[in-house]
Length: 165
Image 1 (tube, rainbow, N blue to C red):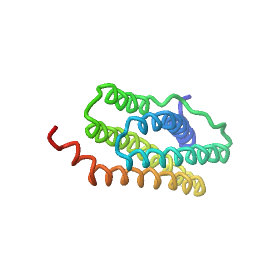
Image 2: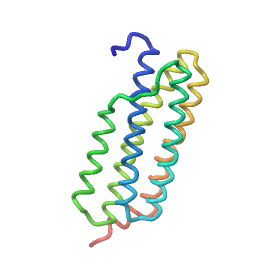
Image 3: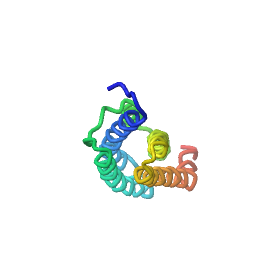
Image 4: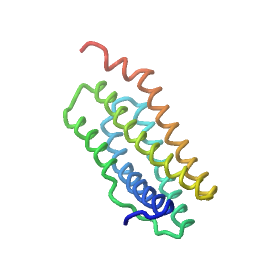
């Protein structure tokens, strides 16, 4: 559909996000399985649970807009996930893999942060404060997970990955 109004653009952004979140529910368990750092595995597990909540929140937003909750294939997220999967198949040193998994997860989060930020701004501009608040809640969660990944990377993962083999 060609967006003719800001609401059309918002709905298209939400459909993209809906699919991106669904792709995350498939990618995160694989990332968990590939990770070696217990702290990183726990972070992926926690965010997987959070992602389920975010999908339910999107369901509510679609309902509030009188739209059916459905996604359109999110090529951006699919590409980011494919790059992360490619790293896993290279079978690097476990500590290097953890560093790469963090980078891949942060690319996924940054994609979502950009999209949720735009959607939130559209909702605000349209006077849909309740939807804007819900999108901001998810945006805050995505930002918190990104910061957590940085703490894990800087706390131990990157140091171990940089150690001579």
